[in-house]
Length: 88
Image (spheres, rainbow, N blue to C red):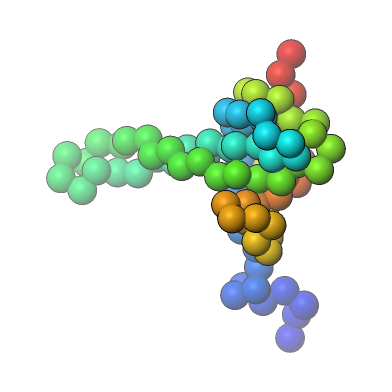
């Protein structure tokens, strides 16, 4: 049996930083497209997560990858893994 089973794997998602006003915390918006059941059109759904940013390196409009982790505070259950695109 392998070290990481599919049940024990932590989710990773890509999103955009929308706020970095808190200390060591960023708010990341993750967008996904889903098909409407009745009209069969694609619509965009957006969800925000609070993620831990240890170095305070992320700025607004950065594209980041976040990963699930243990609860760090009341709302933080994610941590920043890497910055993909930094704001120019």
